[in-house]
Image (cartoon, rainbow, N blue to C red; front, side, top):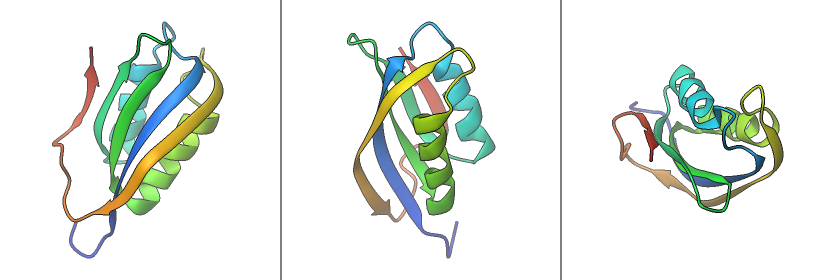
Length: 98
């Protein structure tokens, strides 16, 4: 990844995002963009996670989380926080956490 700028961002997605394979589709889409990080359900019926990777790919994934999601999901809103530039990836893959 030399010469590319890397970004890290935390996210939380609100709406109908549990029981609709949202985490699975998030992992698949992150893989398509060579992103690493994790995603998990919360007790508040939201999905949270962290993305890391190439700045442009992170931007694409942020748009997917905000506007697309899994086929049966309904996204009311998506919040991003702690966005920062990083010098190296802190994860080796994109995991679904329980």
